[in-house]
Amino acid sequence: MYRTVTCGELRIADVNKEVVLAGWVQRIRKMGGMTFIDLRDRYGITQLAFEQGNESQTALFEQAGKLGREYVVQATGVVKERYSKNDQLSTGDIEIEVTKLVVLNPAIVPPFTIEDETDGGDDIRMKYRYLDLRRSVVRRNLELRHRMAFEVRSYLDKHGFLEVETPVLVNSTPEGARDFVVPSRMNPGQFYALPQSPQTLKQLLMVSGFDRYFQIVKCFRDEDLRADRQPEFTQIDCEMSFVEQEDILQMFEGMTRHLFKTIKGINLPALPRMSWHDAMKYYGSDKPDTRFDMRFVELMDVLKGYGFSVFDNAAYIGGICAKGAAVYTRKQIDQLTDFVRRPQIGAKGLVYARIEADGTVRSSVDKFYTQDQLAALKNAMSAEPGDLILILSGDDADKTRKQLSELRLEMGSQLGLRDKNKYSCLWVVDFPMYEWSDEEQRLMAMHHPFTSPKPEDIPLLDTDPAKVRANAYDMVINGVEVGGGSIRIHDAKLQEKVFEILGFTPEQAQTKFGFLMNAFKYGAPPHGGLAYGLDRFVSLFAGLDSIRDCIAFPKNNQGRDVMLGAPGVIDQVQLDELQLKVEKKN
Ligand code: ASP
Image (cartoon, rainbow, N blue to C red; front, side):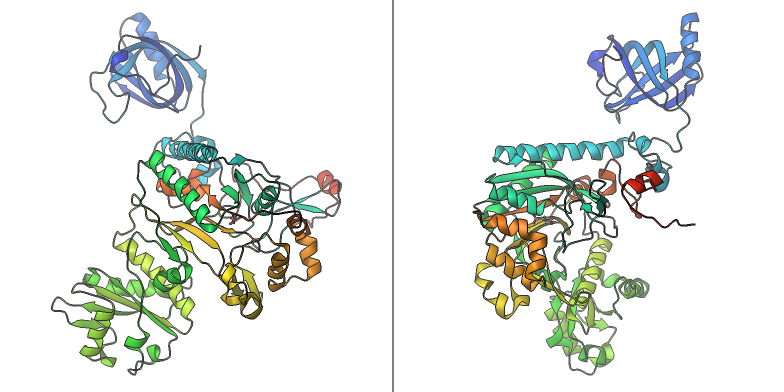
């Protein structure tokens, strides 16, 4: 037997037991006649003690002194009460008086310290990810991920969902993101695509009568990467038949509540619902961070027409009221101005107004407004003495709202209103069916082309498609879109029409989606569903800014796995088999 106990389980009640442990040498402390070793495994750390005593002890003592960090060792010994206890460790009351030590495998010196606070930078940690994963801070994220996936399965199983696997080698689908493709050796010149989501397949399972499906599934999107994006990511993908939007919201609000309860011990209140329209109007974002208020107030009526040309020419003027921020210095406000002017945000400038202790308003545009007019501003913003009003304007209302949204989030962070241990969840509902794409000069599906319009908006498909609202919904937690879905179209004719509005000719629609539209002709039940981003959900629960550390082997910003060296070149033989030609780069 390699071990009788793990490194995390011995307590004071185990004193005098003879035990065998195995693990990695985390730390060696030599203190004169004593040597202490922290032995680590997945479960914890146990202290091994070696004393330079009589002859047999001395041999062990010397053996211990020769161990190096990360050696894999087996230690046999007796559990003793520690002289000086460590209340930071669950095993901190005891130590092992070692009677036998076996080196199972030596180790070369790791390139960074395997500690919670490591000296390893991102790149080196990723290159040696297997060592990084020895660190308990990273390992705990994967343990959390496991627990969450487990609780998801448990909840969905209890509610009659079946987990069905769908293929990874599928077809390229237009709309959505760019596909990853895989050449087919047996069909030269032809390619599979990796699924961006199992969307159409889960809908076909509904046509098959599966009624309640889920799958914890890898999805692939060849997009530019950000902190919350990876080229491959995991979805909790779900679909239900004979449901309306309300049924889905209830079922998955239940799942979210189950996760919060079982994992975090939090009883989530009923999730509020906000229309997409209100989310954009009050937060400038379809995923508002509602941990704090600071809603937008439109100021067109209040500030336009008084001779300040920037406002007079604006299509939108909006402000936020930062409570207690009148103490901001000139320098801090200049920094905020620089912040909104950064190219990623793109505002031209920032107007501010401080509410002084006596209630007077001091603004950066004082010369254009009387104190009465500024008092009207204060009223409109419900501002009080000590508050700071920040105002953006622009000739494109939607763009300006997005800029104001960034400023709002920044102020929320600066004022400490975005506490990672606080959770604010909501549903955003009533998304528009379409959004205009400047790039493509056409309407694009906001969610995806299988989303059903709201029945009352169907007539608008012929007259004003841009106004059609969809039966689509997102779950947002702390400003992160953790899930989203929709009621689907189950009528072949309506699906044809939606494809037509998206600019597909009937032939194109038939080639790409004929399989789905034909399936609908064989009796498709009304159905709908949604998918959660598991990585994002876990990172929220773990309090991480990036999804990377809740993925065992993530890719970097260039989409590379620096440990595996992927992507890499392939042999000429493989290329020939695939009938692919690759220009050699020098
Ligand atoms: N397939 C969708 C997505 O990946 C989610 C859904 O509509 O179920 O966003």
